[in-house]
Amino acid sequence: MAKPKLFITRELFDDVIKKLEQYYDVEVWDRYEQPPYEVLLQKAREVDALVSLLTDRIDCNLLQQAKKLRIVAQYAVGFDNIDVECATRLGIYVTNTPGVLTEAVAELTWALILAVARRIVEADHFVRWGEWYRTKTGWHPKMMLGMELRGKTLGIVGLGRIGSRVAEIAVKGFGMKVIYYDVKRREDLEKELGIEYRDLDQLLQEADIVSIHVPLTKETYHLINEERLRKMKRSAILINTARGKVVDTEALVKALREGWIAGAGLDVFEEEPLPPNHPLTAFKNVVLVPHIGSATYETRHAMAELVAENLIAFYEGRVPPNLVNPEVVKVRPPGFK
Ligand code: NAP
Image 1 (cartoon, rainbow, N blue to C red):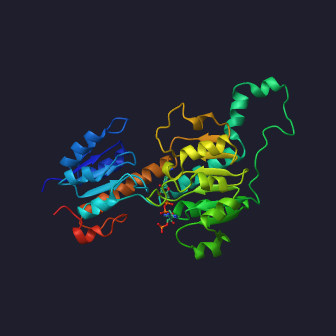
Image 2 (image 1 turned 90 degrees about the vertical axis):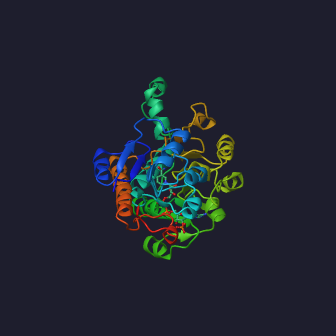
């Protein structure tokens, strides 16, 4: 039997590609920019398996035209770019890469919290562009004051894998009080870490730092809107390393402009890449990074290995370990037979 065809929408790691080549006839999109939708559509029509990124729009139109396609292995934990309901109906397996990126995203979340709370980027610019030198003052009791973390309250929105790791670091590392909001109570973690449940509006009123870790779904789209931002303390910081569309950007810009909140740290945006003239770039109290939550060597490689594991399991007729749509098994068994 000829090997099934696999299209990978961006360069992964050579050792992982080699591993996949033992099972699949692999084609890799080797340009830096993402494949245009038309290319994706064309490839999807030709192949049996696809590795997608969060920037690839895998909608129902594409899936319906992909008559041979049996599996979409997403190189991310979030999969809001894929019409999973449609894939399930068509018997197409969808997998993701949970767990392996938890540490990297939690660490970046803390990098942003510290950067905003201690004004790291602003302070760097102060030194780098000569402002410090121009003050002729080496040290001043009121220079670049920020927020201390010990004893403050961190509000986690979405206490899943990443949210709970961020909570653990807050409690064990920084001596913070942690409150959380999620669709379900996590009594195990409440006991283990001494954290407390709040409804979302209560959390927003109480927290000194609000950190978002929910997936993007119909329910979480603009979860943090104008009304909710107005509930936050004027001294509070908002951190988003989940998905840009969970926050209403226009409302956030208004909140920052009018001082309803004290600052923000953002890894994700409604529009990516963020244009350089975007209003968010004008605020000194906002730290912006380009969707690098999982961007460590260790994690990006582990994500690629997990993608391969899912594809190999499917090839061997096994249910992939990170199946997002388990109901698909009733529509079609795993494998290419
Ligand atoms: P996870 O373990 O699934 O955690 C998400 C948590 O949010 C779960 O407890 C989930 O509950 C809860 N939730 C879902 N819908 C909710 C709602 N409407 N209201 C309140 N809580 C809700 O996922 P994770 O691995 O921690 O990842 C979280 C998100 O981070 C991903 O979905 C992804 O979008 C984002 N992410 C970003 C980066 C980056 O590069 N910046 C990297 C990785 C992940 P249920 O389990 O009951 O649904």
